[in-house]
Amino acid sequence: MDIKRINDSVSVSGQISVDDVAAIKATGFVSIVNNRPDGEAPDQPDNASIEAAAKAAGLKYHFIPMGREGVSAQMVEQTRAALDEAGGPVFCYCRTGTRSTTLWALSQAGRQPAEDIVSAAANAGYDMSHLTGHLS
Image: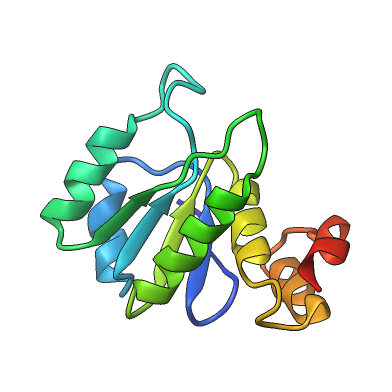
């Protein structure tokens, strides 16, 4: 598991396993957001397995899958709500962390300057410059 910190509130990573949930909790995260649809890869743990492990560990859990259809306004709103109600650091994941970073960036539109959002993503290794027009 390669955790990439976007800021004090949000970190992202690629796919996690059920066994990673304890380490996520031990690192201080209070919530997990799964942005990966079930069934993308044959070896991918399903949403229900990760959710059960998260809840057993006392973590909040949100399933906001972003698939081939791309981003929707509902996904952005769900992400914003998940981050707002977390009460501590949030761990978001998908296959590589890019979709999680995209949803985080769009959820911050109007709350932070676009250049700050793009810069925070870039510092974590994700290029969100193509979203600049949507972040103002």
